Image (tube, rainbow, N blue to C red):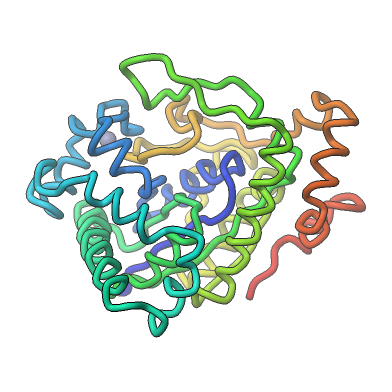
Length: 320
Ligand SMILES: [Zn+2]
């Protein structure tokens, strides 16, 4: 059976949680969430799973970790985080993408982390009885690492959203609901920081067109406006049968079944019937000066994806 990873690359606050949840409604798909974070947020901090239980009390994740590592104490998460810190550095991008450039020591570290990730991802697919895993970790170097897992085919889905929408969202005060033992807020950033990071994330995610075998770019605005069409587009992209869209109660309303996502936007904990609509609050809430500053700092990729000159969703849905 061919097993696949849909890797969502791009930036935070860009709609990846919504897309992951929608794809996870399909039979044979598992909405895993942000697995890059599981070592800190799951193994060390015991954050909430989407089912509402701390991950170490969740039957699903207990079964996964038992299968992969023989239990929560079967692997040292700090060791994995240290390996990430050593491997996923910007200066390592060339040798991560091209194994021929690796030193013996770098290859050894890469093999160690691939062995660990291979066990985790295989166990998730086995315990969930699915063959397609949706990972919204977004960090492109992590995606390139996943591309080297044996017996798992990687499909890169570069999700982009207007930089003003992202910058506005990152200024809002929002709680991190997965941190159940105290009130913690998501990190807030200035619009300048957000615009800068939006550019960097778009650049590195765009490189995955060359460093991973299958790449597609879609826009959050298209997803939110036409979710059924976008789901169909993604499913076609990964060469699977047409999606079952019966979970759409209305054209813009879905009934989401319980799942065991880890990490993502707080919306994953909210009501199971969700209304899908483009979040364009930034258009009326940001000042003209703020919008101008963000657009000035991020115009190259806004131009690339057709954000200037009105709505052009088709130009943002390129398939390579
Ligand atoms: Zn759970």
